[in-house]
Image (cartoon, rainbow, N blue to C red; front, top):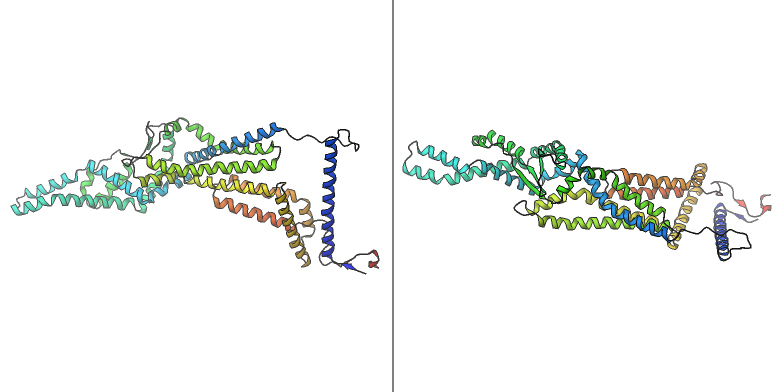
Length: 466
Protein backbone atom coordinates (compact mmCIF):
# COMPACT_ATOMS: atom_id res chain seq x y z
CA UNK A 1 0.00 0.00 0.00
CA UNK A 2 1.06 3.62 -0.51
CA UNK A 3 2.92 5.14 2.35
CA UNK A 4 3.70 8.69 3.33
CA UNK A 5 6.88 10.04 4.85
CA UNK A 6 7.02 12.17 7.99
CA UNK A 7 7.68 15.26 5.89
CA UNK A 8 4.56 14.61 3.80
CA UNK A 9 2.45 14.15 6.91
CA UNK A 10 3.81 17.32 8.47
CA UNK A 11 3.02 19.31 5.35
CA UNK A 12 -0.53 17.90 5.28
CA UNK A 13 -0.99 18.74 8.97
CA UNK A 14 0.20 22.31 8.41
CA UNK A 15 -2.12 22.67 5.43
CA UNK A 16 -5.09 21.36 7.42
CA UNK A 17 -4.31 23.68 10.34
CA UNK A 18 -4.12 26.67 7.99
CA UNK A 19 -7.40 25.67 6.36
CA UNK A 20 -9.10 25.26 9.75
CA UNK A 21 -7.84 28.67 10.88
CA UNK A 22 -9.16 30.25 7.69
CA UNK A 23 -12.55 28.61 8.19
CA UNK A 24 -12.73 29.80 11.81
CA UNK A 25 -11.95 33.36 10.76
CA UNK A 26 -14.60 33.22 8.02
CA UNK A 27 -17.26 31.90 10.42
CA UNK A 28 -16.39 34.51 13.04
CA UNK A 29 -16.55 37.31 10.48
CA UNK A 30 -19.92 36.07 9.22
CA UNK A 31 -21.34 35.93 12.75
CA UNK A 32 -20.15 39.45 13.52
CA UNK A 33 -21.61 40.78 10.27
CA UNK A 34 -24.93 39.05 10.89
CA UNK A 35 -25.16 40.32 14.46
CA UNK A 36 -24.32 43.83 13.33
CA UNK A 37 -26.97 43.85 10.58
CA UNK A 38 -29.80 42.47 12.69
CA UNK A 39 -30.40 43.13 16.37
CA UNK A 40 -32.68 40.10 16.52
CA UNK A 41 -30.35 37.58 14.95
CA UNK A 42 -31.90 34.14 14.38
CA UNK A 43 -28.70 32.67 15.69
CA UNK A 44 -29.32 34.36 18.99
CA UNK A 45 -25.84 35.89 18.97
CA UNK A 46 -25.47 38.99 21.13
CA UNK A 47 -24.66 42.30 19.51
CA UNK A 48 -20.85 42.71 19.54
CA UNK A 49 -19.46 45.28 21.94
CA UNK A 50 -18.94 48.62 20.31
CA UNK A 51 -15.39 49.80 19.90
CA UNK A 52 -14.07 52.93 21.55
CA UNK A 53 -15.42 56.16 20.17
CA UNK A 54 -13.63 59.10 18.59
CA UNK A 55 -13.10 60.63 22.03
CA UNK A 56 -10.63 57.90 22.91
CA UNK A 57 -8.83 58.45 19.62
CA UNK A 58 -8.57 62.18 20.35
CA UNK A 59 -7.28 61.46 23.85
CA UNK A 60 -4.68 59.09 22.38
CA UNK A 61 -3.48 61.77 19.97
CA UNK A 62 -3.21 64.35 22.77
CA UNK A 63 -1.27 61.98 25.05
CA UNK A 64 1.15 61.02 22.28
CA UNK A 65 1.76 64.67 21.35
CA UNK A 66 2.36 65.67 24.97
CA UNK A 67 4.79 62.78 25.41
CA UNK A 68 6.65 63.70 22.23
CA UNK A 69 6.87 67.35 23.30
CA UNK A 70 8.13 66.40 26.76
CA UNK A 71 10.80 64.08 25.36
CA UNK A 72 13.30 66.85 24.39
CA UNK A 73 12.77 68.54 27.76
CA UNK A 74 13.36 65.20 29.46
CA UNK A 75 16.57 64.76 27.48
CA UNK A 76 17.94 68.13 28.59
CA UNK A 77 16.75 67.62 32.18
CA UNK A 78 18.45 64.21 32.34
CA UNK A 79 21.69 65.76 31.06
CA UNK A 80 21.45 68.58 33.63
CA UNK A 81 20.91 66.12 36.46
CA UNK A 82 23.98 64.13 35.39
CA UNK A 83 26.16 67.22 35.16
CA UNK A 84 24.99 68.55 38.52
CA UNK A 85 25.04 65.34 40.54
CA UNK A 86 27.40 62.83 38.85
CA UNK A 87 31.05 63.81 39.35
CA UNK A 88 32.40 61.11 37.02
CA UNK A 89 30.00 62.20 34.28
CA UNK A 90 30.96 65.85 34.81
CA UNK A 91 34.67 65.09 34.57
CA UNK A 92 34.18 62.86 31.53
CA UNK A 93 32.42 65.74 29.77
CA UNK A 94 34.90 68.52 30.41
CA UNK A 95 38.28 66.80 30.92
CA UNK A 96 38.93 66.48 27.13
CA UNK A 97 39.07 70.28 26.90
CA UNK A 98 42.51 70.19 28.55
CA UNK A 99 43.93 68.32 25.53
CA UNK A 100 42.33 70.45 22.83
CA UNK A 101 44.97 72.51 20.98
CA UNK A 102 42.69 75.54 20.58
CA UNK A 103 41.79 75.59 24.27
CA UNK A 104 45.47 75.19 25.24
CA UNK A 105 46.43 78.18 23.07
CA UNK A 106 43.59 80.23 24.56
CA UNK A 107 44.67 79.42 28.13
CA UNK A 108 48.32 80.17 27.27
CA UNK A 109 47.41 83.55 25.78
CA UNK A 110 45.28 84.53 28.75
CA UNK A 111 47.94 83.38 31.23
CA UNK A 112 50.56 85.50 29.45
CA UNK A 113 48.25 88.52 29.61
CA UNK A 114 47.94 88.10 33.37
CA UNK A 115 51.71 87.63 33.85
CA UNK A 116 52.61 90.66 31.74
CA UNK A 117 50.01 92.81 33.47
CA UNK A 118 51.55 92.02 36.86
CA UNK A 119 55.23 91.71 35.96
CA UNK A 120 56.81 94.48 33.83
CA UNK A 121 59.40 92.37 32.02
CA UNK A 122 60.76 95.28 29.89
CA UNK A 123 61.23 97.36 33.03
CA UNK A 124 63.04 94.54 34.82
CA UNK A 125 65.29 94.02 31.79
CA UNK A 126 66.01 97.77 31.59
CA UNK A 127 66.90 97.89 35.29
CA UNK A 128 69.34 95.00 34.83
CA UNK A 129 71.03 96.71 31.87
CA UNK A 130 71.15 100.06 33.69
CA UNK A 131 72.73 98.36 36.67
CA UNK A 132 75.44 96.91 34.45
CA UNK A 133 76.17 100.20 32.69
CA UNK A 134 76.33 102.00 36.01
CA UNK A 135 79.37 99.91 36.84
CA UNK A 136 81.37 101.97 34.33
CA UNK A 137 81.07 100.39 30.87
CA UNK A 138 82.48 102.35 27.98
CA UNK A 139 80.38 104.34 25.51
CA UNK A 140 80.37 101.58 22.87
CA UNK A 141 79.46 98.87 25.38
CA UNK A 142 76.78 101.10 26.87
CA UNK A 143 75.21 101.69 23.46
CA UNK A 144 75.31 97.96 22.73
CA UNK A 145 73.69 97.11 26.05
CA UNK A 146 71.02 99.77 25.52
CA UNK A 147 70.27 98.26 22.10
CA UNK A 148 69.85 94.85 23.72
CA UNK A 149 67.12 95.98 26.12
CA UNK A 150 64.29 95.34 23.67
CA UNK A 151 65.51 91.98 22.31
CA UNK A 152 66.38 90.81 25.81
CA UNK A 153 62.91 91.65 27.10
CA UNK A 154 61.32 89.97 24.08
CA UNK A 155 63.49 86.91 24.61
CA UNK A 156 62.40 86.64 28.22
CA UNK A 157 58.75 86.99 27.16
CA UNK A 158 59.28 84.23 24.58
CA UNK A 159 60.92 82.03 27.21
CA UNK A 160 58.06 82.60 29.63
CA UNK A 161 55.49 81.86 26.93
CA UNK A 162 57.35 78.69 25.96
CA UNK A 163 57.32 77.58 29.59
CA UNK A 164 53.61 78.32 29.95
CA UNK A 165 52.77 76.58 26.67
CA UNK A 166 54.88 73.57 27.58
CA UNK A 167 53.09 73.20 30.89
CA UNK A 168 49.60 73.70 29.46
CA UNK A 169 50.20 71.08 26.74
CA UNK A 170 51.74 68.53 29.11
CA UNK A 171 50.13 65.48 30.69
CA UNK A 172 50.76 67.10 34.05
CA UNK A 173 48.39 69.93 33.18
CA UNK A 174 45.74 67.47 31.94
CA UNK A 175 45.98 65.62 35.24
CA UNK A 176 45.83 68.85 37.22
CA UNK A 177 42.87 69.95 35.12
CA UNK A 178 41.01 66.68 35.70
CA UNK A 179 41.71 66.77 39.42
CA UNK A 180 40.56 70.37 39.56
CA UNK A 181 37.34 69.35 37.83
CA UNK A 182 36.68 66.70 40.44
CA UNK A 183 37.37 69.09 43.29
CA UNK A 184 35.37 71.91 41.71
CA UNK A 185 32.28 69.82 40.97
CA UNK A 186 30.90 70.87 44.33
CA UNK A 187 31.80 74.41 43.34
CA UNK A 188 29.63 74.06 40.24
CA UNK A 189 26.70 73.08 42.43
CA UNK A 190 27.50 76.05 44.66
CA UNK A 191 27.51 78.25 41.54
CA UNK A 192 24.06 77.07 40.54
CA UNK A 193 22.96 77.88 44.08
CA UNK A 194 24.43 81.39 43.81
CA UNK A 195 27.43 80.94 46.15
CA UNK A 196 29.77 83.92 45.66
CA UNK A 197 32.79 81.84 46.71
CA UNK A 198 32.37 79.33 43.87
CA UNK A 199 35.32 78.68 41.58
CA UNK A 200 33.04 78.87 38.55
CA UNK A 201 31.47 82.31 38.55
CA UNK A 202 28.19 83.14 36.85
CA UNK A 203 27.55 86.86 36.65
CA UNK A 204 24.16 88.52 36.52
CA UNK A 205 24.47 88.89 32.73
CA UNK A 206 25.02 85.14 32.32
CA UNK A 207 28.79 85.20 31.64
CA UNK A 208 30.67 82.10 32.80
CA UNK A 209 34.28 82.29 33.94
CA UNK A 210 37.07 79.92 34.94
CA UNK A 211 39.72 81.10 37.40
CA UNK A 212 43.36 81.16 36.23
CA UNK A 213 44.84 81.35 39.73
CA UNK A 214 45.82 77.62 39.92
CA UNK A 215 47.47 77.73 36.47
CA UNK A 216 49.38 80.93 37.23
CA UNK A 217 50.62 79.46 40.52
CA UNK A 218 51.92 76.36 38.70
CA UNK A 219 53.65 78.49 36.02
CA UNK A 220 55.20 80.75 38.65
CA UNK A 221 56.81 77.81 40.42
CA UNK A 222 57.94 76.34 37.07
CA UNK A 223 59.71 79.56 36.09
CA UNK A 224 61.41 79.84 39.47
CA UNK A 225 62.63 76.25 39.15
CA UNK A 226 64.18 77.21 35.76
CA UNK A 227 66.19 79.98 37.41
CA UNK A 228 64.00 82.92 36.38
CA UNK A 229 63.93 84.49 39.80
CA UNK A 230 61.90 87.47 38.65
CA UNK A 231 58.91 85.09 38.48
CA UNK A 232 58.74 85.30 42.27
CA UNK A 233 57.29 88.77 41.71
CA UNK A 234 54.22 87.25 40.06
CA UNK A 235 51.49 87.63 42.68
CA UNK A 236 48.64 85.23 43.42
CA UNK A 237 46.27 86.86 40.98
CA UNK A 238 42.53 86.32 41.23
CA UNK A 239 41.76 86.45 37.51
CA UNK A 240 38.89 84.80 35.65
CA UNK A 241 38.59 83.91 31.95
CA UNK A 242 35.12 84.31 30.47
CA UNK A 243 34.52 81.16 28.46
CA UNK A 244 30.83 81.60 27.58
CA UNK A 245 27.89 83.89 27.96
CA UNK A 246 24.27 82.79 28.21
CA UNK A 247 21.62 85.13 29.52
CA UNK A 248 19.47 82.15 30.51
CA UNK A 249 21.93 80.91 33.12
CA UNK A 250 20.68 83.16 35.94
CA UNK A 251 17.24 81.67 35.27
CA UNK A 252 18.79 78.19 35.41
CA UNK A 253 20.28 79.12 38.77
CA UNK A 254 16.86 80.16 40.03
CA UNK A 255 15.39 76.81 39.01
CA UNK A 256 18.39 74.67 39.97
CA UNK A 257 16.45 72.48 42.40
CA UNK A 258 13.67 71.99 39.89
CA UNK A 259 16.19 71.04 37.18
CA UNK A 260 17.76 68.36 39.36
CA UNK A 261 14.37 66.92 40.30
CA UNK A 262 13.03 67.10 36.74
CA UNK A 263 16.05 65.22 35.46
CA UNK A 264 15.00 62.24 37.55
CA UNK A 265 11.34 62.01 36.60
CA UNK A 266 10.66 64.05 33.44
CA UNK A 267 11.99 61.38 31.00
CA UNK A 268 9.73 58.81 32.67
CA UNK A 269 6.77 61.19 32.52
CA UNK A 270 7.30 61.59 28.76
CA UNK A 271 7.49 57.82 28.35
CA UNK A 272 4.35 57.39 30.46
CA UNK A 273 2.39 59.79 28.25
CA UNK A 274 3.48 57.93 25.13
CA UNK A 275 2.54 54.56 26.63
CA UNK A 276 -0.83 55.90 27.82
CA UNK A 277 -1.53 57.19 24.33
CA UNK A 278 -1.03 53.68 22.98
CA UNK A 279 -3.13 52.02 25.69
CA UNK A 280 -6.22 54.21 25.25
CA UNK A 281 -6.12 54.16 21.45
CA UNK A 282 -8.85 52.55 19.37
CA UNK A 283 -6.21 50.83 17.22
CA UNK A 284 -3.23 50.20 19.44
CA UNK A 285 -0.95 48.87 16.73
CA UNK A 286 -1.41 52.08 14.75
CA UNK A 287 -1.00 54.17 17.92
CA UNK A 288 2.25 52.38 18.75
CA UNK A 289 3.64 53.23 15.33
CA UNK A 290 2.47 56.85 15.66
CA UNK A 291 4.00 57.22 19.15
CA UNK A 292 7.32 55.79 18.00
CA UNK A 293 7.41 58.05 14.94
CA UNK A 294 6.49 61.09 17.08
CA UNK A 295 9.33 60.30 19.49
CA UNK A 296 11.78 59.88 16.60
CA UNK A 297 10.59 63.18 15.09
CA UNK A 298 11.11 64.98 18.41
CA UNK A 299 14.66 63.65 18.63
CA UNK A 300 15.31 64.67 15.02
CA UNK A 301 14.27 68.22 15.94
CA UNK A 302 16.71 68.10 18.87
CA UNK A 303 19.58 66.95 16.63
CA UNK A 304 18.84 69.72 14.11
CA UNK A 305 18.54 72.26 16.94
CA UNK A 306 22.00 71.34 18.21
CA UNK A 307 23.44 71.75 14.71
CA UNK A 308 21.87 75.21 14.37
CA UNK A 309 22.72 76.09 17.97
CA UNK A 310 26.42 75.43 17.35
CA UNK A 311 26.52 78.07 14.63
CA UNK A 312 24.46 80.55 16.65
CA UNK A 313 26.58 80.06 19.78
CA UNK A 314 29.86 80.46 17.91
CA UNK A 315 28.63 83.60 16.15
CA UNK A 316 27.23 85.13 19.35
CA UNK A 317 30.46 84.87 21.36
CA UNK A 318 32.60 87.97 20.93
CA UNK A 319 36.17 87.30 19.70
CA UNK A 320 37.36 89.53 22.53
CA UNK A 321 35.93 86.99 24.98
CA UNK A 322 36.79 83.74 23.22
CA UNK A 323 38.10 82.74 19.77
CA UNK A 324 35.51 81.17 17.47
CA UNK A 325 37.37 77.85 17.39
CA UNK A 326 37.39 77.59 21.18
CA UNK A 327 33.70 78.54 21.35
CA UNK A 328 32.87 75.78 18.87
CA UNK A 329 34.90 73.26 20.89
CA UNK A 330 33.22 74.26 24.15
CA UNK A 331 29.74 73.94 22.63
CA UNK A 332 30.55 70.55 21.09
CA UNK A 333 31.93 69.30 24.40
CA UNK A 334 28.94 70.62 26.31
CA UNK A 335 26.34 69.01 24.04
CA UNK A 336 28.13 65.83 22.98
CA UNK A 337 26.34 63.51 25.40
CA UNK A 338 22.93 65.05 24.66
CA UNK A 339 23.45 64.70 20.92
CA UNK A 340 24.51 61.07 21.33
CA UNK A 341 21.44 60.29 23.42
CA UNK A 342 19.15 62.09 20.95
CA UNK A 343 20.52 60.07 18.03
CA UNK A 344 20.18 56.83 20.00
CA UNK A 345 16.56 57.56 20.93
CA UNK A 346 15.87 58.56 17.33
CA UNK A 347 17.08 55.16 16.13
CA UNK A 348 15.10 53.45 18.92
CA UNK A 349 11.90 55.24 17.88
CA UNK A 350 12.32 54.21 14.26
CA UNK A 351 13.07 50.63 15.31
CA UNK A 352 9.94 50.46 17.48
CA UNK A 353 7.88 51.86 14.61
CA UNK A 354 9.21 49.17 12.27
CA UNK A 355 8.60 46.43 14.85
CA UNK A 356 5.09 47.74 15.48
CA UNK A 357 4.38 47.70 11.75
CA UNK A 358 5.74 44.18 11.33
CA UNK A 359 3.59 42.95 14.22
CA UNK A 360 0.48 44.85 13.18
CA UNK A 361 -2.67 43.61 11.43
CA UNK A 362 -1.64 44.90 8.03
CA UNK A 363 -1.60 42.80 4.82
CA UNK A 364 2.11 43.08 4.02
CA UNK A 365 3.34 42.32 7.60
CA UNK A 366 0.97 39.35 7.74
CA UNK A 367 2.50 37.91 4.58
CA UNK A 368 5.97 38.58 5.93
CA UNK A 369 5.14 36.82 9.19
CA UNK A 370 3.78 33.80 7.32
CA UNK A 371 6.92 33.73 5.22
CA UNK A 372 9.13 33.88 8.32
CA UNK A 373 7.11 31.15 10.01
CA UNK A 374 7.40 28.87 6.98
CA UNK A 375 11.15 29.48 6.92
CA UNK A 376 11.43 28.59 10.60
CA UNK A 377 9.34 25.45 9.97
CA UNK A 378 11.65 24.44 7.14
CA UNK A 379 14.74 24.87 9.32
CA UNK A 380 13.11 22.95 12.17
CA UNK A 381 12.05 20.08 9.87
CA UNK A 382 15.55 19.89 8.44
CA UNK A 383 16.93 19.57 11.95
CA UNK A 384 14.35 16.95 12.81
CA UNK A 385 15.34 14.88 9.78
CA UNK A 386 18.98 15.15 10.83
CA UNK A 387 18.11 13.87 14.32
CA UNK A 388 18.20 17.28 16.05
CA UNK A 389 15.09 17.86 18.13
CA UNK A 390 14.13 19.88 21.17
CA UNK A 391 11.58 17.25 22.18
CA UNK A 392 9.49 18.05 25.25
CA UNK A 393 11.36 21.32 25.81
CA UNK A 394 10.43 22.48 22.32
CA UNK A 395 6.79 21.54 22.92
CA UNK A 396 6.79 23.53 26.17
CA UNK A 397 8.38 26.51 24.38
CA UNK A 398 5.63 26.37 21.76
CA UNK A 399 2.95 26.49 24.45
CA UNK A 400 4.72 29.38 26.17
CA UNK A 401 5.81 31.21 23.01
CA UNK A 402 3.90 34.41 23.83
CA UNK A 403 5.43 34.58 27.31
CA UNK A 404 8.92 34.01 25.91
CA UNK A 405 8.48 36.72 23.28
CA UNK A 406 7.26 39.19 25.88
CA UNK A 407 10.22 38.31 28.14
CA UNK A 408 12.68 38.97 25.29
CA UNK A 409 11.01 42.32 24.55
CA UNK A 410 11.00 43.33 28.23
CA UNK A 411 14.70 42.50 28.64
CA UNK A 412 15.59 44.50 25.52
CA UNK A 413 13.49 47.44 26.75
CA UNK A 414 15.15 47.27 30.20
CA UNK A 415 18.59 47.48 28.60
CA UNK A 416 17.60 50.59 26.67
CA UNK A 417 15.85 52.24 29.62
CA UNK A 418 18.35 51.59 32.39
CA UNK A 419 21.84 51.17 30.87
CA UNK A 420 23.75 54.44 30.75
CA UNK A 421 25.26 56.08 28.86
CA UNK A 422 22.78 55.40 26.07
CA UNK A 423 24.57 55.15 22.74
CA UNK A 424 23.72 54.34 19.15
CA UNK A 425 25.81 51.18 19.32
CA UNK A 426 23.94 49.99 22.42
CA UNK A 427 20.58 50.51 20.69
CA UNK A 428 21.62 48.71 17.50
CA UNK A 429 23.19 45.73 19.24
CA UNK A 430 20.23 45.38 21.60
CA UNK A 431 17.85 45.28 18.64
CA UNK A 432 20.02 42.82 16.73
CA UNK A 433 20.28 40.48 19.70
CA UNK A 434 16.53 40.74 20.38
CA UNK A 435 15.71 39.81 16.79
CA UNK A 436 18.20 36.94 16.94
CA UNK A 437 16.63 35.62 20.16
CA UNK A 438 13.14 35.77 18.65
CA UNK A 439 14.33 33.93 15.54
CA UNK A 440 15.93 31.19 17.66
CA UNK A 441 12.75 30.83 19.73
CA UNK A 442 10.73 30.46 16.53
CA UNK A 443 13.02 27.69 15.25
CA UNK A 444 13.47 25.65 18.43
CA UNK A 445 9.81 25.60 19.45
CA UNK A 446 8.06 22.34 18.50
CA UNK A 447 4.42 22.63 17.44
CA UNK A 448 2.14 19.72 18.38
CA UNK A 449 1.64 16.95 15.85
CA UNK A 450 5.24 16.79 14.63
CA UNK A 451 6.59 13.24 14.52
CA UNK A 452 9.76 12.37 16.35
CA UNK A 453 12.81 12.09 14.11
CA UNK A 454 13.82 8.59 13.22
CA UNK A 455 10.30 7.19 13.56
CA UNK A 456 9.02 4.78 10.91
CA UNK A 457 7.00 6.00 7.98
CA UNK A 458 3.28 5.94 8.67
CA UNK A 459 0.75 4.20 6.39
CA UNK A 460 -1.90 6.12 4.56
CA UNK A 461 -4.58 3.49 4.73
CA UNK A 462 -5.71 1.61 7.76
CA UNK A 463 -4.83 -1.74 6.18
CA UNK A 464 -1.29 -0.72 5.50
CA UNK A 465 -0.37 -1.40 9.15
CA UNK A 466 -1.21 -5.06 8.92
